[in-house]
Amino acid sequence: MIEFREFGDRDSPVVMILHGGGLNWWNYRQQAELLKHRFHVILPVLDGHAGSSRAFSSIRDNAAELIDFVDSNCGGRILFAGGLSLGAQILLEMLAQRGDVCKFALIESTAVIPSKITHALIGPAFGSCYALMKSRGFARIQAKSLHIRPEMFEDYYRDTCAISKEDMISFLKANTSFSLPDAVRSCSAQIHVFAGSRENGEILKSVRVLQETIPGCSVNILPGLFHGEFSLNHAGEYADTVVSIIDAEEGGK
Image (cartoon, rainbow, N blue to C red; front, side, top):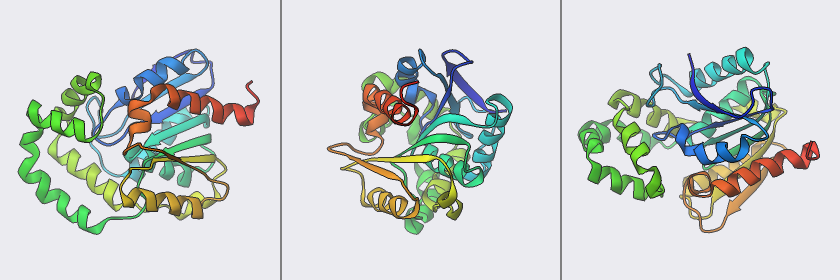
């Protein structure tokens, strides 16, 4: 069973946003509070993360579970879906499996080009330093490197400590081995890709792949921002972007 947090009236159009690997639903708490007066906001907890009842198996499986959730709880289609990094990879896989699962999609800071070297190093690296992740001092360094706001630190630290080593390795390996499913080409969703100008080269190359692969895909490079900073540190702008994407097509209705 998918675990999630929800905000707003259940009869309102659905906005679903998928957090990044190692984060959780609180990644989008502020956005949900801003959007709940107009939308039913659903923030799932991805498999293998704190509060989830499932171990992480694969991006494909998590996408299928979320589609089942949409079928069972949202009439088979939602208005808007967004995702960050691992969450965006899962969203892309959802669109490959069901091209009309959402009308609008926001893909943020995600890689669609497999990284063989990083993938190979994940197991040995986390096997030797996993225990450090339970250290508050080490967690603060990690949170700072991820540009997580100080007020999010306690959520980040608590939930990081709750992720098993097996799940951490599993979803990081899935993240670094992900390649864009060819079926995304034919999805009917209107896709908007966002990335910071200070992302690493792998992410910026992935933006170009997405742009070249998905017909009509729009690309937005955000000046001065690092990986994931758009949703992590600019909740108001993110919420405004969700509304503007929807209103541009829906006419504000």
